[in-house]
Image 1: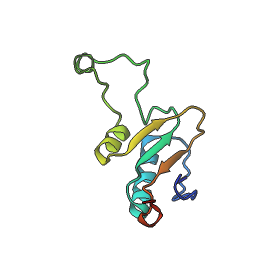
Image 2: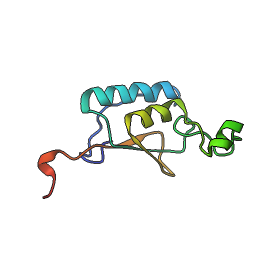
Image 3: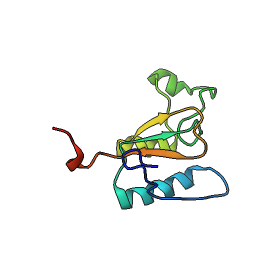
Length: 104
């Protein structure tokens, strides 16, 4: 669901929740609506690595965890990742406000 418009920009139903499904979903959303500013999502491993998973030596030295494939895509596109509790198998996107609706 798009927070700015309250509309669902694209629906995708799959048998399981996985990174490929989110890649397909983002591809369709971006092709029709552009790159979202942020994605609110549940605590699923496709977005962020599990905090209980031990850090590699490289991660410990850099003091930063390596992102998942989807997390890396979001970083490269400048999409803010916002993990929230109790979001059931969906994502909410925050798109930029249209220029005509900006106050000024």
